[in-house]
Amino acid sequence: MTETPDWIAVDWGTSNVRAWAMTAQGTVLDEAASDKGMGKLAPAEFEPALLDLIGGWGDGPRRVVACGMVGARQGWTEAPYARVPGHPLPTGLTMAPTTTPGLSFGIIPGLCQNDPADVMRGEETKVAGFLALNPGWDGTLLLPGTHPKWISVSAGEIVAFRTSLTGEVFAALSGHTVLRHSVATEQWDDEAFLGGVAEGLARPEALMNRLFAIRAESLLKGLQPSAAKARLSGLLIGADLAGARGWWLGARVALMGAGDLMDTWRAALQAQGVAPEEADATQATLAGLTEAWRRSQ
Amino acid sequence: MTETPDWIAVDWGTSNVRAWAMTAQGTVLDEAASDKGMGKLAPAEFEPALLDLIGGWGDGPRRVVACGMVGARQGWTEAPYARVPGHPLPTGLTMAPTTTPGLSFGIIPGLCQNDPADVMRGEETKVAGFLALNPGWDGTLLLPGTHPKWISVSAGEIVAFRTSLTGEVFAALSGHTVLRHSVATEQWDDEAFLGGVAEGLARPEALMNRLFAIRAESLLKGLQPSAAKARLSGLLIGADLAGARGWWLGARVALMGAGDLMDTWRAALQAQGVAPEEADATQATLAGLTEAWRRSQ
Image 1 (spheres, chains in turn purple, brown):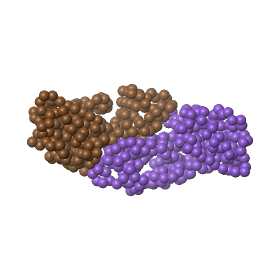
Image 2: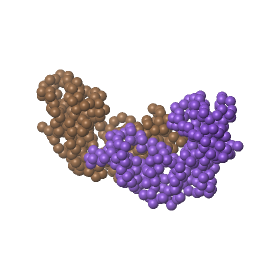
Image 3: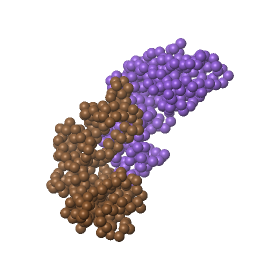
Image 4: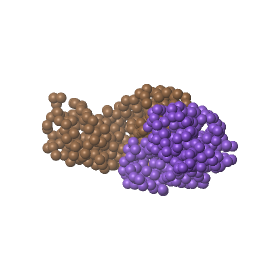
């Protein structure tokens, strides 16, 4: 990189951190990443970790705009939640304390919802970026992940949102219950997945029993690990779809994410007759960080 | 113990093993227990573990009748499942291979159900014992535990049964998801538990979201760990009750178990207007093992 960045975009999550050297026009000059996520750092360790990451990007003034768990209570400094309904970037940045001359580090606040109680940190930036890239878009944004988020967007604002524990429930049940004996495989059975989705959606009240039935079918009927794993995922995503019915039924839906989870959720939605639009999560994050940087000028 | 037992009763589960020195009349002369559960033993290690446990009970012929996971595929020897509907002890014992002169070890087979697929190992003995102690009892037996079992009993037979993963889901979510930060306490909030039961029962389809909401309420509203933990348990038990509605609504219900879990499930059932009868699990196990021993004479 020969050019000095005008500012630096940072997405600092629980497990990883990514940084981009940016021009004022929003062009990416360079990027860097490390596994020094928020979960591994004490407050005093954030600044050194950042400097390790962006050290090669010149030594002039460095203005950073960041989103994600870096602003959590356990992060670098707490960026108090703003409240929905409202714009995804309703307030200014929360500045973290820095000791390096010329370095400023502004954190985009997360959003909270009072009733039902809910929180997000990082997703508000993706929504802001998605809306910057798709002005006037109304509908439901679905962000798959450990904690899938359904986000209702209208007139450039977040109306309401709904987070579920679905992805983390899948990981906990796969790894830490008797089901681990039944689902130990990297393979995936599409048909078993869709069967699980249909069952979870039609009979969410049967979930506690249908989970055990995966084990019973392994023992009695030789249910294959690929089918057991995919059915477990399907049952949980089906249960999530059942609770979120009002968010997707007859609605315009856009999926925003990356990788296999996009395929999984797309298949689950398509089986219900929903043809989701799709958006790239990294693009949206960068666009949202850029939007926050512009607003801070 | 001065008297030599006529036979020995053994309840060999995944985590623990208990043994009782018995007279032909079903009187307990002595008892012993260890933590050498099935999960810790290779097939060849069962006989030495047994001899450690019952070594003090004379050296004449020793006839053992056992129930539980000792008869699983990973146990001492597999005792193939018998099928419901039918008597809880429909077949003879499966004999494990032994090398000690005079030692015989008979295992009570577990039961399976074809559709919906389900299995039990050990609970069939409790049901047999409960019916021996309560001849002619008809209704639903509920055995709380890691895998709660709803067992429909009529005319001395098991008509059908339904196992759920509820207890293990609670442990996995408490220990291995973001909820662990919210539920880390030994305290318990009865009101929060019953609120969770009501919510899980009324809206089982909302579960994936209500689980995350526990975390959100901890962050936003200072939800106390005792309330968070009890609500988590309540939501899961409520979801179980929702799926098992036909098993308890308007039915005669008996709870069979021990300890805190009995209080938990009793409270959940009472809140739905069900006044469950209660039975002691150890008593029922012993009565069931005695019944199996009599039948094997």
